Length: 263
Image 1 (cartoon, rainbow, N blue to C red):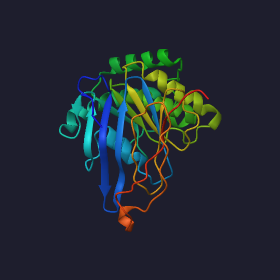
Image 2 (image 1 turned 30 degrees about the horizontal axis):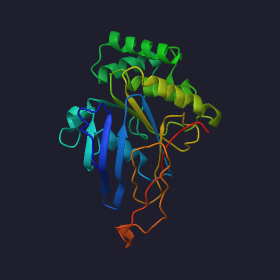
Image 3 (image 1 turned 135 degrees about the vertical axis):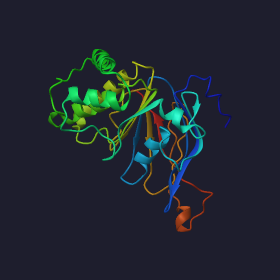
Image 4 (image 1 turned 180 degrees about the vertical axis):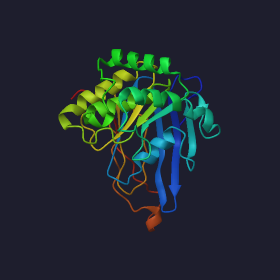
C-alpha cells in the first residue's frame, strides 16, 4: 500500500505495520490505520486482546512498538517525546486515571499542574469544553460521586486541558448503562471539535458508536490487522493457529474494521 505523506496530509495519526510483541508472542498487530481530525474510533474485543497496549502504542507510549507511526506530522518511533506531547491519555486500566476522591475543581488544578498548564488556562479550557458539549458538572463534586457516564466525560475533558491532537480513553463504556452509551459517544465526537482532534476509546460493546466513527474489533488470542476504513466492512478471515502455538505465520487472521453508518 502506498502510504500518504502524513506530515502534509492533515492526518492526526498514520500507522502502517504497527506491531508489538512480548515474552509470550504478539500483543497486537500489524495495524494499518489513518485517523482524521474530528474522528472517533472505538476499539473493542475480549479481555486480553491488547486493547490497552494498542492505546499506549497509538500515543507513542509503548516502547516495544515497531512499524510506522506518525502523530500530527511527527514520527513517533524516531522521536517519541515530541509525538507524546501531541497526545493525551484520559485513562489506561488502573494505571492512569483521575483520583476519585478529588473534586472536579481539584482535578482540574491537578491535571493542569501535571500538564504544565496554568490554572486560569485550565479552567478556561474546561469551560470551553462544557460549552461545546452542553454538559456541566458541579466543580465541588468528588469524582467518585459522579455517574459512570459523567466520570467518562470528565476523564476525557481533563485530558483535554492541555491541547492535544489525539486523546485516548480505556474501558470507556464500563459501568455506563447500555441505553446511555450512544449519547456518551456522541459527546466524545463533539469534544473533538475543540482542537480538531481525534478520540480513540476501548470498549466492551461497539453497537452504540455514532455514524461516521471507526469500529475496530480485536480478535481473541490472534494477531490483529486493521485496514484503513473505506466505508465497507472488511470481513475477518477464519481463525488460524497463532505462530507461537506452532501455526503458519503466513496466515494471520484480520480484524473486522467498519465505518459506522446509519442502519
